Image 1 (cartoon, rainbow over the protein chains, first blue to last red):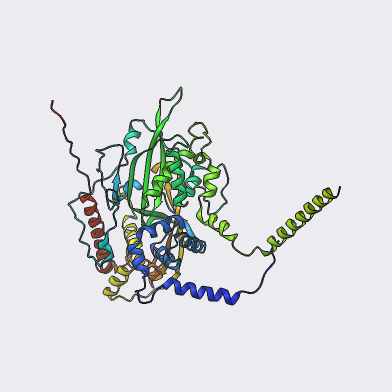
Image 2: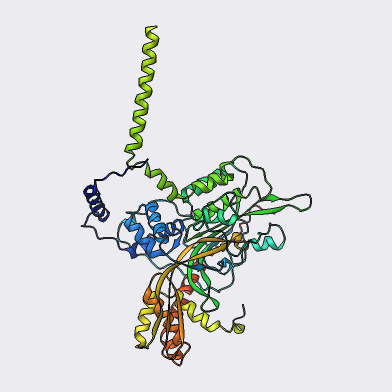
Length: 362
Length: 151
């Protein structure tokens, strides 16, 4: 039973005023601008866009500022804003083959056409704190070399040509959308992928790591990891044709995993897939591993009882906004609920005490 | 796709360019053209979301990746020419300019708009892409093999 409790308005107003002051912090230090967050905290902005499920770097940066750097709170703000937007429609599926790659690496083929392009990566850094950044250091320009805009074909397409890898089944043009209808199980792969790409990075990472440690058997190779800009195209009814409506940066990870085969079909490698807004490579690799683990049924594998194979467990617990909402509500007033618990325990104790007294008297 | 065979190729090209251009660039180049065309607004600038889709395994069934913010508007010139604008982000002014450019590009003003606005925008996009590609190319790994031992 919920009973409305009045009061506390002044306390709440004052708490929010203090929150605003604490957010601003020491006024002798210059205030952060949204543009500074957008351009210098880009990986935080990317995470908020991916898990907030809305590609808008300005809004993500604003949310980070408002949330005092609490990324889950920022994601919450973006999710709430997202629901206010009228939906103009759905895009055509983005073509990651046409990506302008900032980064593109393969762990499976050294000499892949298009080459191994490291991009602006933390890999091979020594993870030592750089005290130069604490001072006002000017950064030199990154080196450039002449480039020829050749295509960068997906590495999987080479395995595909030899039939060494399972093909991907086609599906509905308009996929199920968990923002429109509640997630029901068993979930289609489209719903699983949508759920994973907006899921909490820490949770998806933990699930993926569990598969590597042996909970679900799917040793994965990263066939390809690519990060870069792709155009987004949508059919415009009033025009009668599709136009590009924008360009987004995404991270794509394709894994190649062990075999599937049968009496009638020779063994083939299987795939896991990760695609995430922004430069979000840890998340994209994690997503590919969890996607692969969740595919056990359609690939005819055994259920090993591993958490990462349990779609109910994974999909119902990966959303950090749902989780936060339910978790944090328990700190809000539950005075009446607790009152009834108190009355119950007093009654039980009274009865127990009476029994002890009665037995002692006998 | 063969661009030559697409009757809408040039219109798609300017609409796509206006959609992807930075709002600040659009405002700046528009101002330098010193144009004040008459028009009526058919659809006031409206901010909304578009669900961006991907494909499982890059080639398989479509799935919903997440939304992006988009602003759209439509205008009509006194001669009846209608223009539509869809732009990334939440700038209403940008969307209105995109619709106006779409309309003007279907009229005699096309050359002026092309030279004053679209060409510099296209150059800016090309320069940006080229710069990133050059930086990426500089991080391309050149493997060499170390021979160990003697034959």
